[in-house]
Image (cartoon, rainbow, N blue to C red; front, side):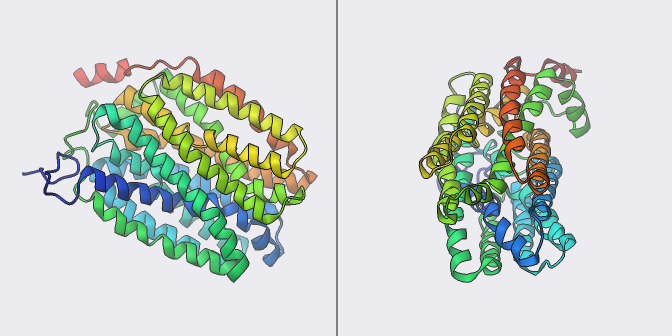
Length: 417
């Protein structure tokens, strides 16, 4: 079969579905998918007050979202590896839109958990930058892979920069219910953009695939026998804990400290804006230096920045500086993490193996969001979770230090058997 016009192959100059076009569409998908998710903290106070719920209710819903997102990602990644990203991205975009649009009609905690928790979590599992990165890995040469991973992650951060102030403006102008419906409508662009990946087939059709073709079960078995992969997965737990806690609880934490809701929303936007730079630079540096050392530096700096932030008085200046610093570090773990998975195992099962790493990330996210809400309701403070975040950051730096940056020998041996 002629694959000259396939994205997974080498597109001809006459094909409109060039790698550049697909990368542009993938970046837009990452931006759209990450935008509403990173703005959920803006809805914590208005949604809770409208229903007379404590913050722990909404926190549990977002915690469920993180957990479902994490559990669903390996399965979405496996489907992407088998059938290509177009189908996975398209269906997931519709689920995401439904979850957002139905949230305003959730008048019980159970309905909230089903909409913002289950539906949005499933949508994110198949529409976030993890699937986009897996698609990109098949259309770019090896020397450009780290760069493309940084670009996809940076695009997701731009979504946070755009959606956070937009969400606050929608809430102020139309109310939180309409703001969620508008967010949901925007997610319907994802299936349209996903059609650009049509032809970026799965493991049997993509020419750019590397790595042993030993089947899903054998790959999973050997991956979790590989010490460096287990260390990488373990460290990624901390990233999820920190990001999910800050995304959901930083806006109400700031408003309780006397910061205006407008500045709180701009703090989230600044995290997204600075992470455009941080993620892109992480992708560039990941192609030139040790990915393991990049991860160790990232977690160490997160711990130091967060410790300073909670020790100093909360002022507009400290909020802006913390948002900028955390923005540079926010998703900068993603390019070196996904790059290490490719280095260890190749691209053939990247979607699934990165998915398991991301599952660990989202288990951390579940605990960060849930503990933040529960402890706030019980002791009226986020301090314990802030300090847990600091301690975990330094622990993650230690865990990533022994990672061996080379192909997994056990997997290579089984491929030859």
